[in-house]
Image (cartoon, rainbow, N blue to C red; front, side, top):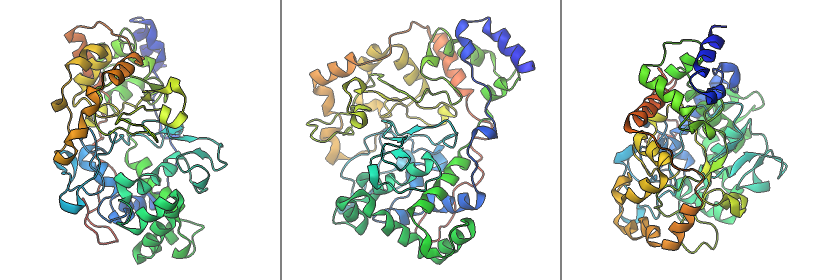
Length: 437
């Protein structure tokens, strides 16, 4: 009753506040087995899952960077180090391409409402291929994944520039070149033949009686158990407000919330319990990088959702990201075009003006001189820039500097009190004996 009364009082400030979501609770999330999560924690940081044994999931989704890497576009297989200090490698091992998109945040991915993942939604719950998901693996995706988060976990493992490596470098890359599902049994064997992992899987999975029964599905379910529990977090001032604490938001954040759910129109896309409609929208972000190009695409552009759907109306649209703990997960946008919350907020309010003012040095990109020629070449293609601008789904909104500051204050109020105190954290060592980033 208390929550209902204070929300009702807030409604008087603006009609759109009726879309404020109910508070999150553990019942809104999938239940994960803690023993499986412990295996997943080790695997998440174990480079045994990469083709050349030189990168782990945690390299680009690191605890020190709130489950991200702090870069606009990631440095995948072949790079050295973590976070903004990660370098592009040297000699024959240096990277051949930047990761085309910003590393997505991991917060609250175990929520039961999530039905689509990746910036372009190339993984979604579906029976199109008879295995529960529409994915890049199509009918070759195995069955048995507990939910979409587990299905997601296997895809970076077989991505050339993320974790698999280049053809002729290792058996994983070679297998992927033959067919996407050919690499997963090899990775599973790598893991289960390590005695410590084999024993852990037998203990944690009821249907696994011997290590030889461990497949990529059990590995993925363990990774999902870790990700789903490790980054579940909803104890921010905003969450306290939703639960009935009328004083949880400071005055600036309260004004920002009124704008978010009112005049600024943020709730148009950032709606629902996760502050995402899980749909796709074109923001007209400044273009750069190699782009996640489609087959036969002649230029380094990223056309977003159309690459998955093949529907022209989806061109340049990307999935709305959830916002809890967003202040910890910059840079922002599908390509990390803006380093600060203020920058991405101002872009939403004035996409044309901010796009025109944006400069290459605004991106957080580790140096890779051999890639410099392609990093920003798309910006010189006037026809392509005009197409991207014409596709924008957002229109300018006139707010003053004080109102922008209030919106940013509200976004900071989405940071959980315990966001930086994760239950398992980063392991010091992993069973493979490989170094931990």
